[in-house]
Image (cartoon, rainbow, N blue to C red; front, top):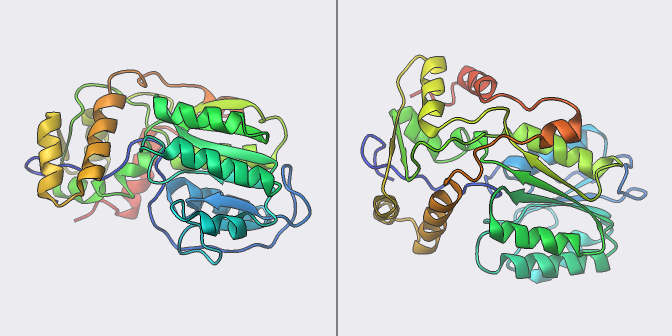
Length: 310
């Protein structure tokens, strides 16, 4: 991509996408929990992504059997190859359903419908859906999960704080400037660790069936304010500027981003950042009985790792 000191675009999907690669874990050993039966594994789709990886790590730490749903997993899972679904679902009683690349893409409701039908037919009793806050397309998929016949929980997430540390944004922040087609619209950035904690509770505990948890951070910041906090806690300036949507799309195209990806990103940024998601929600508190992690605490910890160092 172009240098962030000019018109910088970033290929990070906004809400429910969970496709950041990480080391695969394929353990299927452990004890049982609510929503599981015997030694039945919990299937974690997008299990190498931002939230899926964290969900799998927490389940494993609880001693529960986990099956990673990813193309590179020991038992491969591919949303575009339904022939991989039966083996991934074999013996599974609970699923963390994160759809890639995003619930807003054409065909997502149809794919989620087919998967839920296959899952319930295979004996799945509990589905926890990672959804996107303010996405009408994601709400269609929520309706699919509600109608699936399984116990369901929806985790409707705000924009991930980890998009600043586990995506193309890292390079732009290191270079000292980020530019997106978003103006002075605040967003209550949510920590992916909070998302994972809520999802694991819904997968392993009673009392979460039929709940929709809107998970956000405790306060909303604009992107400029977010860069200001990163600047303060890293000790070096990181600027922000708003791009016109056409300029953003042009920057993506100039950087070689496929047209369908550029169109999705432009749509998400220009649709979801209109103020509809500006208000913090209480999903973390309702699900876990504690407050969500503040963005400043996330930035402080991230800065200590050196992720934004040049």
